[in-house]
Length: 266
Image (tube, rainbow, N blue to C red; front, top):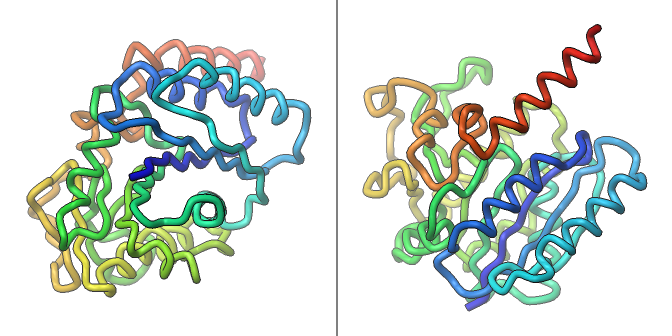
């Protein structure tokens, strides 16, 4: 087996948040052997010296790690945002390694952490169930107020893993790679990805509800959730950005961001 983390980020900031995540990845045991790290950067701004420095610093960060090896840093346009980043990273992995027996944990900057051990194996172990095609930190069973149609239960794509046997088919026409509007990315990206997995005959699962299997015929149920499902990630190995502002590892980061914003105002 080969283990990958496909990490999607962008150059619209100074990358300090990414390095907080890298520190957390090194701090906690993944639960598997060596992980190959593929970083994919969306170029929100024109590529510059800052981006070259990020690549060098990332290589230095993982140079001494025995558990995480930086395999590649890929820069691409911002069209499609994280979904085109995932497609780009998957294409790279397919070309250089193939998908057979490849477990790929996909995450973006909204997935903070990890905050505990076994952060990779928690996803892999659930995915090894024969009927499960996709595992996320959280599942959304609620309607989206802005999309204007009934949406199906789906994995929220800030961190997730897809069964290796599905990746070839998905990569042929990966969803939302040409979208730029946020609602389009949710509808044609996040929701569509779960629909494709279910259409292929598999079910969805989450760390949030590890026994709640979701298939094509699973109805939405507001009784399952009383608030945004991302809020439930507070107890999980990866936490959504909505719930981590007061964790010690990230408190300094948010305070510095607030100070910089105030300085800019005055």
